[in-house]
Image 1 (spheres, rainbow, N blue to C red):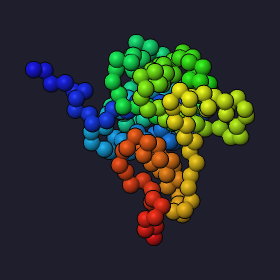
Image 2 (cartoon, one colour):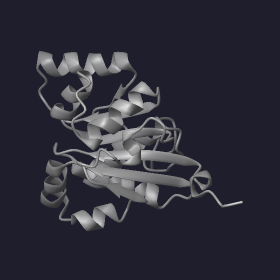
Image 3 (tube, rainbow, N blue to C red):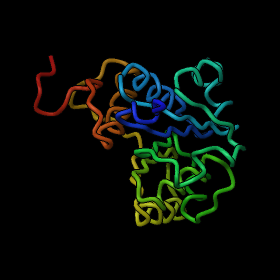
Image 4 (cartoon, rainbow, N blue to C red):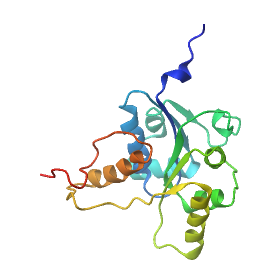
Length: 198
């Protein structure tokens, strides 16, 4: 019998990075997951996302792609992620631009990223959107309501301060940890309320 590599992963997650500011969230998610056993990651980065990664983090596209187990071109609509028959446990888009949010709210899947997210919704899998924009106008809010009604979780990266973060990294890790919590992934990225915070 041929060994099936897909059966080895405990959890299989799709990670999307769009061109909104906050590329560090997607990159940090990949860094954290790459250090965990039994989690397989599939990365899709938009064209603007690649530019934002380089501007905001100084990392190259190759460095970020190397953090994922599999990486795909934004234009490759023949990739496995474009089909509901490809089994995975959910998708995180971090950061999620308002353009991507609008595409999902109106089922307009013109790239592999929006197609993969749309497939995640139609297959009733968990989709987490780390939306980045402020302030929000009514169109943004209506799109958030629309995707929520479809089954997505809208999770703006809003930091907590009860644990008195001492660095930007700790603030980023809080939001990353909250996103991972939604998939039941154990981590120690931030101190939880009610625990010792010395």
